[in-house]
Length: 117
Image (cartoon, rainbow, N blue to C red):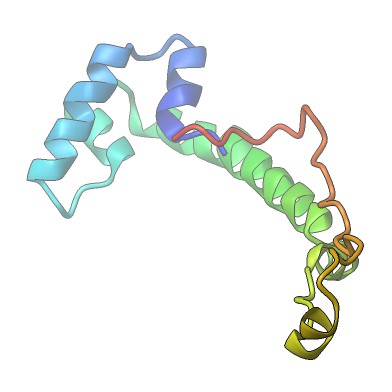
């Protein structure tokens, strides 16, 4: 999922340098959230932050979570579980047993989720 700063940069509202400063400020002021730091510095208005979160960030993150939950359905998870070979079977034969592992399900290439952090 994209972070708030990515949305603000894409909208042309702040720069990467401003994000770096805000993140540093946030470390110093533990009780302030990232958006609150941006508003306190006067780089964006509170109304802009509220609108962006309500109309863009929250809906996209809900959709990404729903997509992620679909891809991790119980059927797919149980298909990906690899059962170990019991020691009694492995000890009876010195030959290699056939591979009983099932391939992991692959995720769609463009699922709208950003894993970079």
